[in-house]
Length: 465
Image 1 (tube, helix red, strand yellow):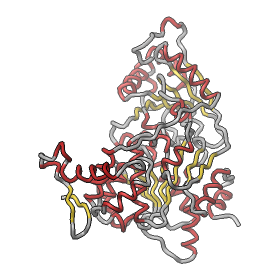
Image 2: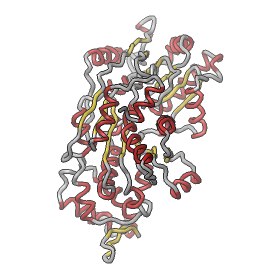
Image 3: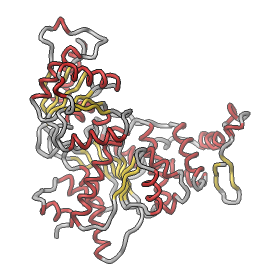
Image 4: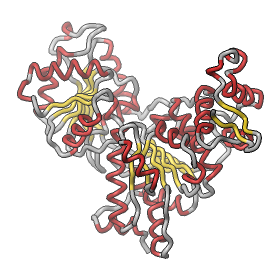
């Protein structure tokens, strides 16, 4: 008999991919997994389908599920709304009585207060906002029913301190949630097996689930008519702005990626200068823009109201803008994986072809363009190196726990030893960290400002003053 999620797929005339079926089966078998699939292939449904099936069975048996059940980690705020919409579509489609919420730096104080009174069963958040939740009192009770944490775009988080934050949060959940497991979702990386072990922990077993679907990507180049006009370095490519306008006019919707916020502002103004008819249908998007304007741009792009958006990495991860037909990459993307990820913003649906135009800003990037084509042709994707022994992140984590309910040194020590980041940490280093949060260690003990955490002998915990 088909599961409820699979029946919902059938009702929508969809056919589940093999990797989605494998993921749903993995949840039934209590496995921890890393899912690797092409952009736009349905990874969100792969990550949620298993837990939704299990929850619906509980509901049909008359057992009401309350509190946090699933945490979905998104690396950027622009991705959270899309995940929420997909999750709500699935929950409502199968008839599950669950709520889906978002908690990021953009969430209003009123909404956060309402969540604390009644947590949604599925919460979409970021690594930073998750750690803020760990600093609240009552963390053990809040997370004790947690079944699953899904880390989206793991390839983007691994190798950063935000990735270490995810590892530490997962270690904490293992101490208080008996049914907890962690899943990851990733685009292509050169070291997927290692990425899985970093996510799950070096001493735990897991599985890598990969899609066999090959995403077709069309790479085109925007070149100057005469090579002499292309400088060797120090420029941002605006001499080819007329060529970008031609791309915009020949497609229903286009994303134009730059590598910095300043560059995006310059390109936005230049395009309006040479094509004033784009006023009102050309927008700008980066992380420094007000939340209300960013939300408007994302919604207008999703509804097909904009011809083009000049953006930075604020829109290059996982966001589903179906109307987007083409991508323009201004300058080198600084990595094969990032170039493929950005290309996937177009044709963001199963079976569709992604189209990306590469615009070199100076002569040396012509070499990068050739290298990108060759790497994509032979599927040579750079690996992401994991971070280990990031003691500044660990100390911040310990202070986070101390602010909330406090922590037992023995319990936390055992938990963090199960992470990849701190598996090789020894007890001398651990006691150095504990002393540092108490009085600043030998270097800072003379300064009272660093005496923040105290040992509560009655409770047997470290607590923040």
